[in-house]
Image (cartoon, rainbow, N blue to C red):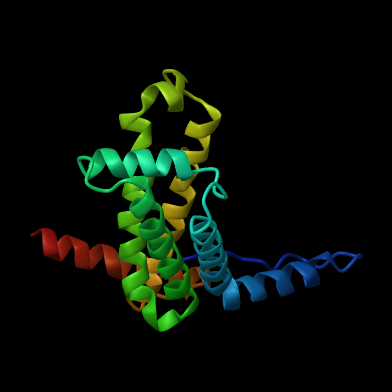
Length: 186
């Protein structure tokens, strides 16, 4: 599995040295982009999970506990659900920080995110003002799509995928992957 990043940060030099700074920025992104993504996602999950250990510290606590109660058919009340969710979210954060645990953290993140977006469906009065117009709570939940997208990228990296930053190599790799897909479909 390859993660393709097509970027050319080299521009013709200009009098203010802008191309040097773009080149340095591009080089940094190439070397550390997925680590920055992994670390920032880890911080968000650990931080928000940690807040759930302390009652009423998390703005999402009420909707999260109600969602868990509904999907567990009333078996998990908030006094159990919130500490459990806190452990799950902190575990995701720790698993993302410790790179060798990403293969466990990413699927756990997908599981948690599936529950996190459910209020859009099971509590529409609280999450939608009208069709395609979410409430503030709905917007908060919809932004989880960004976290899911980041997890997809990290999932590829966890399985050994790498960024290919050279545009010509990226194109070659893309063609090889497309050929593999075509052979598998035949």
